[in-house]
Image (tube, rainbow, N blue to C red; front, side):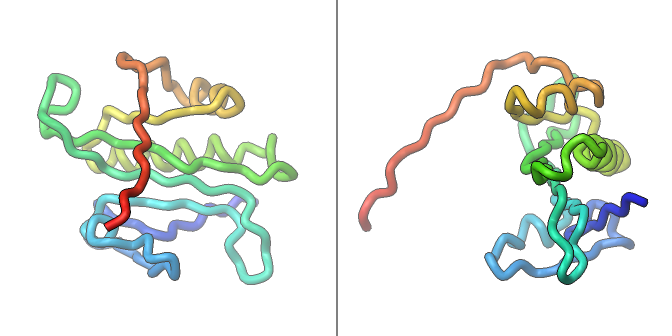
Length: 141
């Protein structure tokens, strides 16, 4: 039986659960209710099999996001020996349901070619705008 465990649950005030991270990942945005991380296999001594996260991003309002909120999926990863068991698809479905339940119906993500079939099966299509990155070097202070 597949059990997906929430690490950070928010958006729904009554069921907010936050477990602090030793890496300091939980910041005020997470605690404010904008982030959910799901994991498969997080019991003590059990390997982490798969994980994924969603968070809320804020933009100028538009016809597809009248309040300016969009969802973003990231970090959806399945350990190589656990692939093909449906973990990633289940995580994607639960993250999408969480965002939809919060009234967010425009969801974005970036994908590798290997991950593309999982997202397409969940209904994702090529985005309207091609992505670009800029990574700048850290400056000495």
